[in-house]
Length: 418
Image (tube, rainbow, N blue to C red; front, side):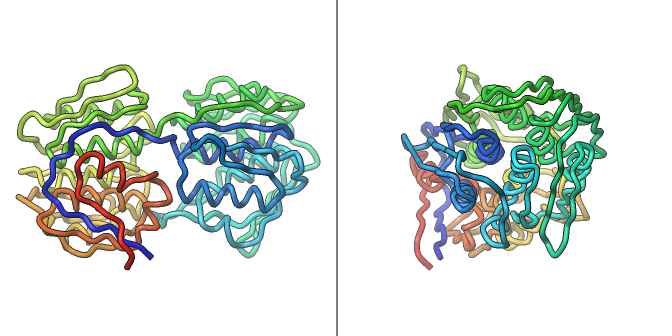
């Protein structure tokens, strides 16, 4: 078991290159199961969640190789079924994309309920609603999800709540359904568009991804292809917020600026300087920052995955700020760790009232989930003295080479054995 040790007080400067988007790579890798030809997926972040999904695919008979550093070659031609016991698939939330992919290709799948971070109730009822509308029978028993169908038939599906996972899973299953499937009240996140683009490159017929109505016309076969995953907007946003917190000046490279507009707008509102250069952004401190109010919303609103690092930033800005978490009910668990560092934050249900303090103090903190881990790194960067982060396996699930990237920006951070 390792921990991160951070000495605070350094302004970040330099350039950081953003990795591929974990939240796009997981469904795209799962979607490769829909073809019996080779797929090469480029710009894949080599993080723990990807390693787990790779091992799952190997376990059910696929050939998966890492080629050219951040590319995966996937050959699932020898995969005949997708039956998984409790184990690997419980380690990540994204394992549930195998439900849609395997149901689409094999018309039957049996896997455990997914794992992932404990940030609140994360039901899969909308996934099941979609599968059943396509003609599948779905049974959940003793933590296992069993879905099967004689054939899948296109249908109109209205999602009761906007769900990224359900939108993608229904797309995966529907590409082989007979006729047209229409998903209404669909989620619009960039990784939904990326997954649809990958499927279309394989030969699927999907229109409307990125809007609230997606139309899928079923096809008989998907071919192999080569495809590059979009950059990670959450990783990019984390470094943008870290630059603001440390009063730094950095260039964030290999991004799609449009995906970062909610974060860019809020940081500009607070007084940060931001300049756009094609596929990069310069984020630099200009003047004293002012407090702000944040409410997390589905894309294109402010992302829930950046709520925690933004709360850290607000905790050291003079004045009152408020953060409302409208997506997940347990996403303020990390606040106790910030309070131990000297932050003045009061949580009331899904709201956090913040009174900015002059400084945070380094101490030993425990990482409660993936994005909280990124937030506590930001806290350590601006705290006086040393901060030690324990349970950093959460961070390794979603951030590639995170301490190396921060070190290249001048941060005093290192990974040590406990």
